Image (cartoon, rainbow, N blue to C red; front, side, top):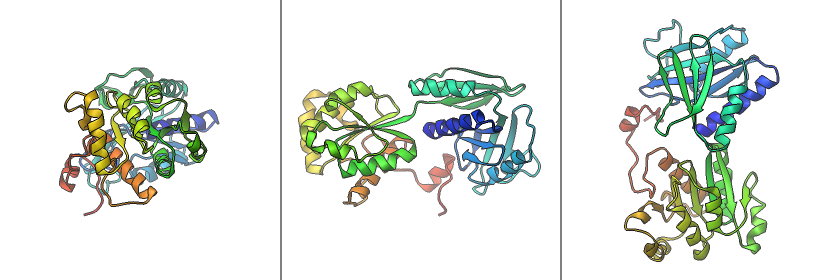
Length: 337
């Protein structure tokens, strides 16, 4: 979600610099099934063009009309949507949940520039908004901080962008890079084999890293917003990447290969790790969707990566996903049964 929020901020800043009035909405709290979690952002400019989402459509429709009508919004407003909404006429959410959303008019882009600069440097930011007068402040965020509405203040946490480091160019890497970038991942590629170097040029938007895989992992310095996937199918290259990535803070580490290949890999790597340290390696990488085409394999990898990031699976994909009932309890707006 942080990468999506940063994209909304970049768009809002661009509109503000172009001279448009911009209103920013932030979900401060959600209860029950809701379309978006706390911290989600939505920006709407004075002519009604918008970016992001907070309500899946029903909230946005009302506020686009209000912004286009020139609503003043001299200070931030906290609006509740859902059953028993405090504001008369506020739409109910189709999923039955409740949202508390803070709307503010962007008066200065300084704080947005600061948030974008800090997160680009991979530093988490806590941005505070005083509801009484709209004053804005920012500081480095603590590791356990979350977006929250406290006494007269909204605190929003922004984390660094997601990153995906791929080891090895090829058709699976091309498909995976194309799928991951719209989800907010910065995709990096290490491909030291000269014969496959031309394939790297077929991955638009991907930044290629020089050197061998272990050097690339060291250069990236994986943090909890980084995933590493070894796709070279060359044991020497993949093992180099895994030896560097598994002890790191990366939230996901996976490697391509059959079950037999994966078992041989584990035996090779076992002497370099303490018992249990290899357990977080996802190999064979990806959910078992039965796919054999490059695009299907890439989709299976990305699906597992998303599930791990969102706490639905462990790093090696061994935990089952929650039931629909559990998803509702967690405040997720699931597909209709």
